[in-house]
Image: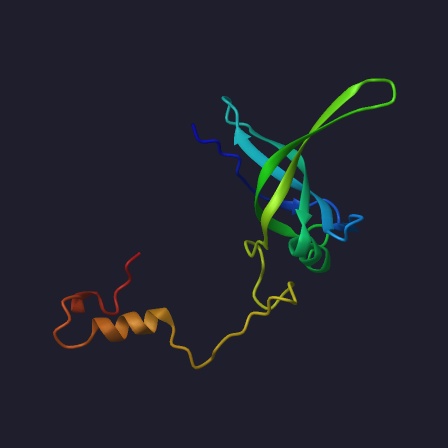
Length: 155
């Protein structure tokens, strides 16, 4: 029987990644992510809640997260779940689910052209042909079976 432990999360960082090193010199970045959930109940009323998760990244990924990400950034990550258990001095047991990140990427979902994300600059190529111009040119070539659509709106 195969076992699968993979999760994908899209949300916003709740704190700056905190970079630490083990005694062996291995980089660890710890950060938090908030994931909004929205739904409509049976009365049609909109509801929402937020889930919070702790994330751990290791090695180069940890160092890259710490140097590139900040609180509020919208990220998407792929990782796997880990259950951490411990017992306090009084003998009370605690469990927490943590996500170990395998891949972390900034989400470009809400980035406006020429604003924000200085490390991902948008550059327009003014000489680039617009997709609509390519379509019209192609559609109006003699013998093209789609000639009747040239210059007409499709939607």
